[in-house]
Length: 256
Length: 315
Ligand SMILES: Cc1cc2nc3c(=O)[nH]c(=O)nc-3n(C[C@H](O)[C@H](O)[C@H](O)COP(=O)(O)OP(=O)(O)OC[C@H]3O[C@@H](n4cnc5c(N)ncnc54)[C@H](O)[C@@H]3O)c2cc1C
Image 1 (cartoon, helix red, strand yellow):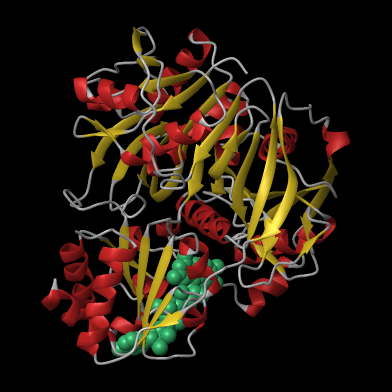
Image 2 (cartoon, each protein chain N blue to C red):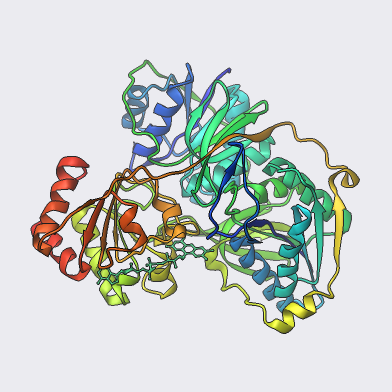
């Protein structure tokens, strides 16, 4: 099987984010592989173990230093990488076009895995757009995946324990959710081995990525500051409980 | 702008409050509002939609067969059909669990821009406001294109009545059963009767402070008494005390309840990412220096094992 796994280079979730010119973030913070993509890479390794002879290609659109994120995917078990290099911030419409073009140029996908969303732009849609460009079926927030007889049986979680199970014909696109697996934690030898794996660098112009008919563009950014002014509720546990109930009733008006 | 269409979510024959909130939000900048209803219309739904400002109710009545009706590809095709027939150039829905699956499908089919989880939308200018970077940043985003699509965060806007006359249009022939994606089965869980995490007015959430699975029942019991939804930090999920569906945070659900009661949760940046837009935060914590104590509206220093049973006793 030819397994493509799309990975994104995102700021560490614990990083302090500073805004520059009210328009973009200061990028001098640590960047890592998007957490949901870790589940996608881990699942691709499980699929390769199941279907020997498969190849896993990690595909990324990002700046030059996104190479480190592609390397992380290689350390987790991807065989080689494709980095579509761009300095521009791309929206999901352009991103999907770039990933689609890179995959088409490279080979024939049997399955494409992505994370269900990226923790920077929180867009939740690249996987659907890639699917539409290929004409492949798509599901998102997958929590189990089983491939047999040219079909993928996937369970997806909605919320509150609600699930839907689908049969998809291959090739298909699957957005990995957190329930899918436990991410592989690469060992030092894995990391050393990954340094020898190849990463091909491509550019948007050389891929002839067509312009999208629409776009989303950030026009302003502000830090989400909390204007909360904490008040302390003291006293015995019973007095504290009584005060909480009073607040729920009288201030928040959520209790009758 | 030509016409705005709102994908309606209903439950037990009534429009969800959160969907009514989307109508209110859209009504601020759109003159004419169409409601797209997929799962059948009741009198109550018609009345509610007119009461909150819908001019045209589009009945997309999907098949009664759940395998067809619940197939997200069928639903997306139905919305696409309505968008074309009704000449919609703005489409809104909820960033609810269903919406997160449906809206991006519609956007991909239409090759149209989409912003999910909006807390504000101006349909005239096509500017949406949403959070990014794990909720640390609010971004204003300009959408450009023929059709613009917006997923609205549940509870971002409280519904306000705006009574109008509504007409109903039936649009049939929108069911295309796809060959490449078949819905095999579905499980609606056991949350019947309890408000869902993203829609609840009150969430009471527990973290490492609950110490073990048995103790976590204290949160669930308290939730029941308060008619709240129980939530959890990632630790409670990773320890196997509660299912992942209850996790609030950057890699869990993003919630905006009226009140969020955090018990035995330290308030890590990743937990905050999921609940910082709660209208009111009450933190019950033994440690007065926990991050959440500086970032809440009411800090309740103390042992949750003393305070929660008291709350239950007094209710
Ligand atoms: C990529 C990534 C994604 C993540 N996503 C999420 C996410 O979505 N959601 C999430 O929650 N976390 C997430 N985390 C984890 C996060 O960093 C924290 O580890 C986690 O939120 C801590 O959970 P906690 O507050 O329950 O535990 P702790 O930080 O251990 O806090 C426990 C608190 O309980 C208090 N306490 C203990 N006993 C009592 C008692 N008897 N009475 C009252 N108070 C008591 C303590 O004082 C302490 O403040 C993520 C981490 C990473 C790296």
